[in-house]
Length: 198
Image (tube, rainbow, N blue to C red):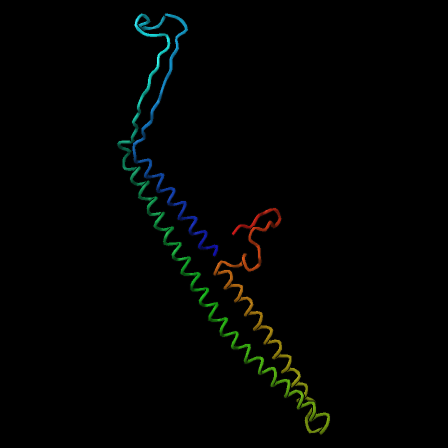
């Protein structure tokens, strides 16, 4: 389900953008330290202060007003997250619809294959009967024998075409359920230097 995976990746990206936008609206508190060491005695208040001075600061930084830019960034990130979440639902719905359509078509094709197999048996029996009538009795025209032969091959061709359509639908079902790599045993395999991960 690559479309669903791609949509979920967009949700993760939008959630990260929203978290970043919300973090920009909160204050930043930091602790800073400083060490100053004078090499000689020529500094301010040298009689009262040591040559090495230590200091620590607590810094609070917060954007107070930026013309609504921070709120607009947060709202845009929220809308982006909502749109990405909707895209996931839409992709999941589309995959379910495609899977349902493929399954229904697959059932229809399997029934058609059964009918075509019976039709092929009947055309083969008809061909054999026409050949027997032509060869043994001479009561059947040669054109009827050729037409019966053509019907046998047409029935085989139709059956093979239906088999091909059924296999294509089965591949669509595998794709829509996300089991293609598993079915072809591609998980954790390296193909042309690229490792396929589940």
